[in-house]
Length: 489
Image 1: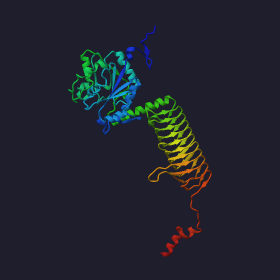
Image 2 (image 1 turned 180 degrees about the vertical axis):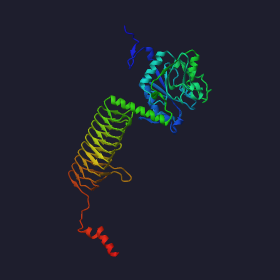
Image 3 (image 1 turned 135 degrees about the vertical axis):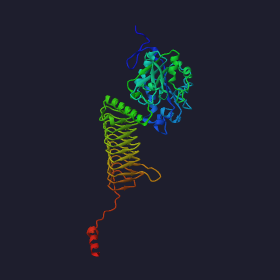
């Protein structure tokens, strides 16, 4: 008969009911990060479309953590907003003075009072951390039967990191910070990654016995290891094989390395899902971007924010697309900049087009080179192929907008709208002085300045009458003037 307490984890492992006990995340996000040389907390620096600390929160949620307490201090309001202030699954603890990681954890005691499960403690500067790694770590902790587990890794140059010191049997005996380490301890290459899982019942009272008798004058969370060991408890260590994933970010160089890892991870996931990425090493796709199968992404493309790209779309080299929707089968040619726009199916854009916020292109619209569009709807099958500015406009279906057309939307005080109905032809070098409406089927002659509404199917012209001066060049042109100067000399 099957054991009723047995279930299977998402990775396929069998686990018992005891191993499925509740887990609470505690994210340490109060520090400044002076080595970033920034007026902002390092946890606020953006990576692949999210503030650094937000990546840690999402990794914990992906590992099955339901509730989280974030310890804040420096730039507390900004960090609150970065992790999601107002989310009922998130609580906050305030660390007024930054007196070490142990002090940060103790700052959250009131928020976690009465909680009896496991607490997953995470430094907030681990943006490359995967949910899969945390799931494996939690499983390791529960199967170890230890009250405290930590995640470690081995790196060739461990400078700046706390060293993991093991005893003769291979168990963790303590962690020593670099500033407190003896020379033989500094030679150790196994480091502490700032990822712990601890039984809440073995956290608060032991940690309060930690002291600040160290080079930094701080209360270290790592002191909990020695305290529990003295009480006869085992401390388990899960050694992770990929240092790049579990190293904290302390400098701009490390920030860049973490960003490369996230972008490459996103590219690999998209390629596995049927997207063609010509050169993943020069492609930058934020973590929340979605791309449909059979899309093609050329080199030096940036897909940022909440962008979505449909199936069979093409994004040309050097294009930057932010918070926009790109429809199925649409081609964005090279070096376009698109922000806050909605692009329908089968459109063609660029090269060198600029679509600004609140631009809407309906199906099969065409926007060509050096065209700028802002807060404008371009109807199905309409086209503006060259050197044009369309701002604050409503443009119907099958409209042809000639080269050099401008909607003059601003009078120095107020923005006004231009409305162009279906099947209108706008000749080249036309200025439409808003507010103005061009009704269905009208034809605007090239070089016109339109200041009044144009009726349906009318021809509108506003050119000065052409006048030809016979033999003017012979009488007054450069050669004629040269002859006069020769005579005078």
